[in-house]
Amino acid sequence: MQKSKKSIDSLTVMTNIVLPNETNSLRNLFGGELLARMDRAASISATRHCERRVVTASVNHVSFDQPIPEGGIVVLEAKVSRAFSTSMEVYVDTWLDDPINQRKTHTNTGIYTFVAVDEFNKPVPIPHLEPESEEEVQRFHAALRRKELSLILSGRMKPTDSIELKKLFLGEE
Ligand SMILES: CC(C)(COP(=O)(O)OP(=O)(O)OC[C@H]1O[C@@H](n2cnc3c(N)ncnc32)[C@H](O)[C@@H]1OP(=O)(O)O)[C@@H](O)C(=O)NCCC(=O)NCCS
Image (tube, rainbow, N blue to C red; front, side, top):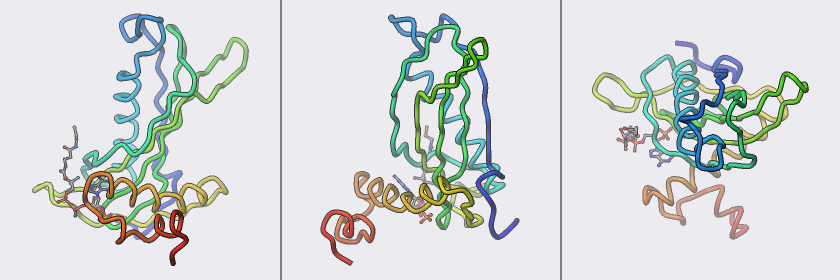
């Protein structure tokens, strides 16, 4: 296993069309259907990064910014944005692709945490991630804040034990 990897190594692109049975009463893609697709793309991306079996530990953030209509072409792009010891953050960007009018609209963002596990479902160490582009560097740095927030909200960390969030909210070092 490599000691460190780039985001591009875990890039996972899933392209699909929205069928009628995947829509809500407004004939737009049903939110739960999109969440399932994002989770699939993110888990493949996490597996590519760590070359291990992975489990979803948390969904840190999902935004539904634009509706995706029936018949729309949906493109999901998932990449690992930061690797910690055994867990990693995966960013999923969703686009509505309109090849007829040559338009690509960003519709959603999902941010997931996956944990690499062995055959006994015990967490195992994973390669580091080296961000390259400006966007990858920005996401890499913000990932620690999101991890701490997720751990606090799930009762796994005391707010006073956080590093980044204390700095952000209390100005404490
Ligand atoms: C996720 C899971 C493997 C964590 O196991 P655990 O024994 O609690 O392990 P740890 O406490 O050592 O946590 C492992 C890593 O996950 C991270 N983690 C755990 N819960 C987290 C959460 N809610 N948010 C962010 N990170 C989390 C920990 O910070 C740690 O990260 P690090 O090693 O990179 O610092 C375990 O809870 C599990 O198997 N959950 C079920 C997963 C599943 O079935 N998912 C599918 C849902 S349908």
